[in-house]
Every structure is written in structure tokens, then in C-alpha cells.
Figure 1: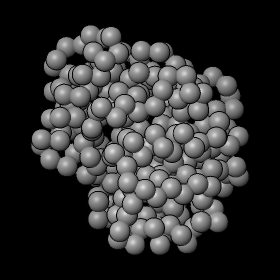
Figure 2: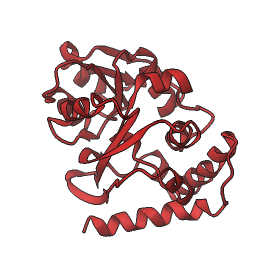
Figure 3: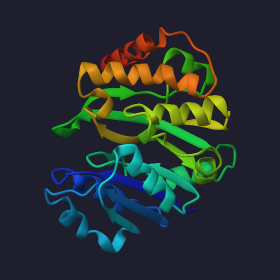
Length: 250
């Protein structure tokens, strides 16, 4: 089973090697690594160049933001299953892809998610939050839940059928995509008790209080975009869920 791994980056020279090595070290054979760079000027492209022999597609050009870059990767992907690991983040361990391929081979899921370590931006070994998945419950979306996009593997045919990221959402298009696939279209989803990703805190939706507020407002908007209704209080429910993750990491 070929798995496409998509990495998007921009001026990420400090951490891009960690990300690329976490893909190279995988013990799964057919891996299609796609790297989309937004036109970096800090040496990122030169660092990526060291791995060109094991990168299937490398695109470097200006983009309209992270979700536009992700969509570029999706349009290039040919694997049966697609995963994302962005610059500065890491696939958690070397057997992740082979273990996920075995899970998808069971044929009972269109998307599979696991657990995630959310780590210190300056030290990827220091876990700040632990996201524990648990058995999938569709209605959990109503309380602000979603599986971490970087810890969720999805069949390519789902993207082909139901679309890519919406670029009219600036900070929560990953939530909208998960919601559209899992809640609206009811794809088959399963959880595995396996830490699949280490990702640094401080992403686009967490950079400031204004970004956090905008992200949660967009979560609420995602429901309306998909013709579904939910209480406006969901903009408060999601931050409260994150607070519990800090205590799990201690």
C-alpha cells in the first residue's frame, strides 16, 4: 500500500531536517513524500535539497497560505492513503506508516486517527499536551472535538470524492475538512491507540488570543457551511477541551 506523506513549509530551516528524517526513517516501503515550499529564503530549500533522492515531488513557489499549500500537495498525491507532517513536526516513530498500512488493509475504515504529542516549540522531546483519541463518536463534534489533522490518515478516494481544504477559511480549514468528511458525509472512522505524531505548539490557530478566537469562530461557521446546526457555545467548548490536555501531559 502506497502512502503519500505531504509536508508544507515556509522559512523552516531550523527544524525541517527533523521532519524530513522522520519520513526517511520509516520502515514502510512504498512512501511518496511530497514537499511544498512557499518560496523560502532562509536556507530551507537547500536543506530540502539534501533529501531530493527520497522526495517524490518538491514544489517551491509562493502560495496563498498553509491550506493552499496543502491542496497543492493533495493534487500531486497518488498514494492510496494520505498523511500530513508539516515542517517542524515529526512522525512519532519509525513503524508508524507500516502500522497504519496494516490497519487500512483491514478494509473497515476510510480514516484512522491515533494519539498525538504536542511538544515545546524549542524542544520536541518535551511534551506539553497529550491528545488521547479514544473510540470514535460522531456526536463528539458537537462539543468542539476533532481528531488532530496531523494524526489522522485518510484514504485518497475520500479527498477525491468530497474535496480539499477550503481556502476561504484562514485558520480552521482543517476542522472544516474533518467535519465535512466525518460528520456530514459519515465516512468510516476508526481510532488506534498509537501515538502517531509529535507536533510543535504555536501553529496558525494558536499564535495569539485573536487567532484562537478566530479559529473557534470559524469552527462554528464550518457547521453552517455544511448545512448543519450547532450551539454558538461551541466557540467556548473547544478551548475548554484543550485545557484538559495540558493536565494529561503532566
